[in-house]
Image (cartoon, rainbow, N blue to C red; front, side, top):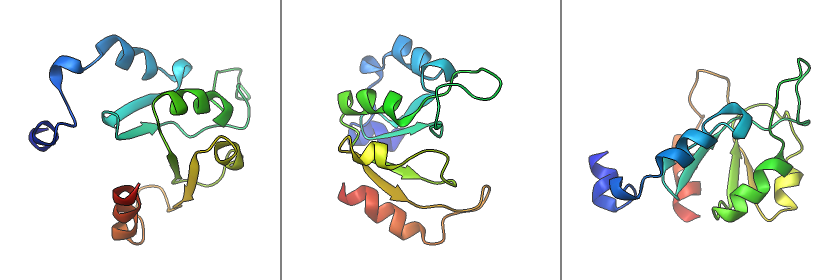
Length: 119
């Protein structure tokens, strides 16, 4: 937190609590800014808006308008494909495949860091 404050990535007076509370809910995308306006984490998209039990899920088409609004220009898929990645690409959002088994680290963490540094 100290480093984020020092770099200006986090400004307590600019933190939007209501917006955070809204988007962190599963029905609203299950998203959280890790570094405000720099790095957002979100639930893996689905291929349909509802799962087999009838619960709301988000598709790439649901995320794209929000990501464009927030100037998100890349998505890193860390899991097995559960959605059509080209839906992001067709909306001008880069898709980077970096699958690794759950509970493990990426095979080359420096590659991951370089990707985000250059974007």
